[in-house]
Structures are given as C-alpha cells and as structure tokens.
Image 1 (cartoon, helix red, strand yellow):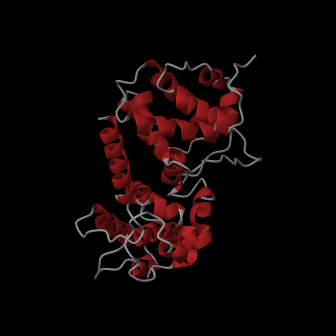
Image 2 (cartoon, one colour):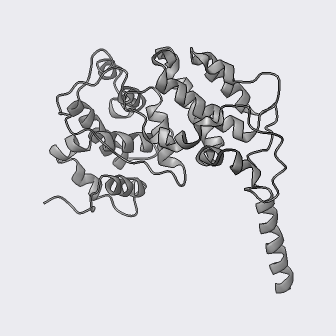
Length: 296
C-alpha cells in the first residue's frame, strides 16, 4: 500500500513539473492578456503600438517582452505617460501582465537561449525567434529597480517587486531630501494617498482637503503613521487588506526618515508575531537596515 502511494506521489509530482508553462507556449486568444495589451497600446501615445501584433497569437515570452517594452518606452519618451485619469488603470494593467508572465520577465536577459534550451520540462519546441524586440535583454529587472519615484508606473513596479518571489525591493532614497520638500503631483504617493484616504479619513470633507494642494514629505509620513495605527486596530474593516498593506509598506519605506523623526517607527518594531502585519513590518525593517529593536 505504501509503495503504491509513493509511486502515486512521484507520478503527481512529475505531472506537476510537466504542466509548468513554457516561454514558447502560445497564449490562447480568449486570454485576458490580449485585452490588457490592447489597453496599454491605446494608453501609451508613442511607437509602442507597433510592437503589439494584431494578426496572430502571442507566446508567453512575447507578452513578457510587451510588459518590458511598455516600461522602456515610458522611461525614454517624455510623451509616453498616459492621460492622468487613465494612468492608474494603465499601471495596474501593466502589473497584472508582468505578474502573469513573471518567469519570462525575470529570465528575459537569457533571451533566445532561454527559450531554446528547454528551460521547463515538457516545453514544446521553439516556434521561431521572438518577433518583439529582444534587445531589452540585460535591461529587464534592472530597469524595474531603477524606476524613478515620480514615474506613473512606479507604484505598480514596487508592488510587483514587493510581492513577486525572487524579486527584492531595494530602497535607495536620495541624500538631499528634506521633510518640508513638496512632492510634485506626478509622484506615486498621491495615488497611494487616494487609495488609503477612506481608511484614515472617514469623512469626505477631510478627504477633499487632501487633493486640492501639494503635500510635503512630513505630511505624507503623518499619513503613513495614521494608516498604520488604523491597520493595527482592525483588519475586518479594510477592503482588500493585502493591497492596503503593501501600500502602507511602500509609504513607510519612502518616508522612513520622517517617520523616525516623529518616533513613529517604534510602533512598527513592536508589532507582535501573532499580528497579521508582523511579516510586512519585519520586511520593512529589514529593507531599511533596522534590527527591529524598540527605540530608546
């Protein structure tokens, strides 16, 4: 009996390995990724549209390259930003594409060799070289890590780096920033603020005061601190707690010096192991180089 069970387990494991997708797999036309690529094509007012084929099915590798192409175009072309009302939607669609084809995004630097050496067991033969610019290669995840903080894609890039296995989110704040520095309206923190404002400020009147003026670093740190206190109190009242949790983490990393100045970091260090925020708090502390001890 035990032998039969052992054989069955081996067969199931082997089937799981065989079922892993290959970069050369063709994505069926009814997959949502085609609509996502079309949305990005319409949102990016530049030559990106030329890289989105219309007359054939695409492989997983090609969809990964589309996500990276959108990133590259948006970095090198000042006119590549979508209209402000549609930017958050386009950014969210980009992250969904990148997350869906993450293995191919992470291995894009291996380029055609990555496809040809049958990287996954049971991968079908390569149908041909990728038609989407494979020159991105070495720029792949490096490009994601170097995304400027005021770029419209920055929040979703950071969310991808935070949640995706094997991708590390490294904080590299500028040395000359000051708590009184006002952030430009293009900065990702404003979108984060709108996302979490209903949690921190239940009153619509209070929330309306946030969107009519520029906000400085100190004020954003206050927002991050207030959000953390709210999250410590109750999880049930938060809609989509995982997304809010990640948003708080990115705000805390961005405005960590200001949080330290207001002694708001001690609460982060004191989060108990049985609390749902513990793992996120510990990761934030690890990224900023904090050993997790309470402030003296």
